[in-house]
Image 1 (spheres, chains in turn orange, brown):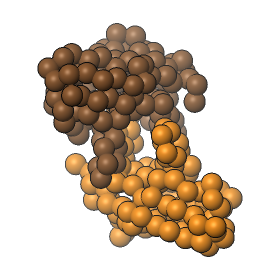
Image 2: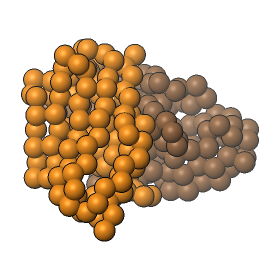
Image 3: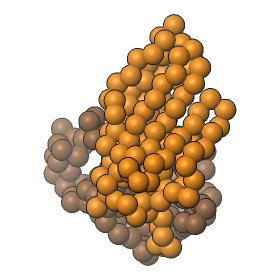
Length: 114
Length: 114
């Protein structure tokens, strides 16, 4: 089955700096890659996703890049703010007519320091 | 987010007891999922369902049973709880594959098995 590795496990940045979180996946047939943000004690919430026919996607301060050849994808957060502090999870899946089973990475604890 | 709910939110039980965690969604989403979240493991899929009366195993199904007699409900039962099943359990739903892959998570149930 799919295996997703995520690095780093913790990341501390100064407010205003950029943060990058990287994930690799094992199944070359995976074609959907979402990123979730989870604040302490809350549910995971989707912040951005990318499909395998696209190399990059941006949404304001957040961007995701995908390298299908190397089987890795990354989350980029620019101009970090204290409210960006949370745990971020990457995931991968092979979306078919039979559904969308996500395999998650182990998470990155992002701390934005003032 | 209010469209998917879980109950109870907190549960303490003893080893060997049967426990049922409830999940209810109001969106008429076809797909529903159960994940467990443990430190160091991220989110791991227990079971999923593509429609009423259609369920399948995920990555860690042992010790769990699911059913889905109605589209909106997807209960998860621990037939004989063990301490290793102490975890936070999240239910999720998605509309469909092919453009409706986004999984929306419920608020979670914190389960402690003594």
